[in-house]
Image 1 (cartoon, rainbow, N blue to C red):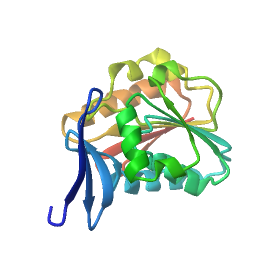
Image 2: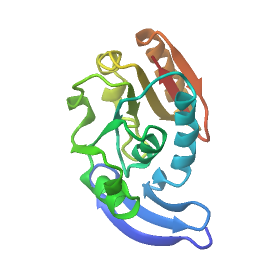
Image 3: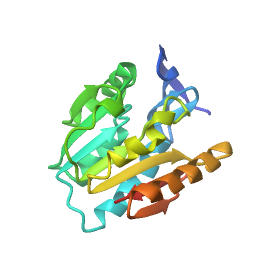
Image 4: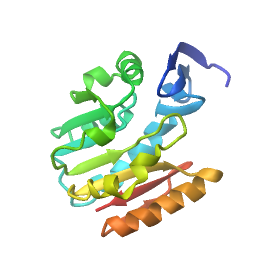
Length: 199
């Protein structure tokens, strides 16, 4: 893309090749193996998704983000619910570091835990966001019934799944699993993603 500037490149054992890019149209964003993980287009579809929750009657006092990445979702949650307590969990310290350095993650006033998401599920939340990818792979353990059931105590849970080519089938299968576990599962399709809003 014309006018694309590479700000930093790193190698992560969790997410592979990380690049921080800056373009005129999309601003600053972080890619893992060529797929945008934080900032840029990611901000656009999360904003659309969270607006749906914001426009509902749900009151958000606390929020847990599993798969914090560079902190795009945390920033948006803070914007919609300025007084909410927000905790973010990510397994990749490098991703969080880049988010703090380039995307203002350190200014979002959230509690950050460097941890594997399935080992960090204490407490009950008004909103849980599950955005767990290593590059473009959704780890299998986060699709198992035990993990999904552990989230049902929360008021609302949003799962982000990629939705293009072979990922479409994976996402649809995942949706069927969610329907067995949650009472309500709403499908929402922004960009090349499928969001499952569950309660």
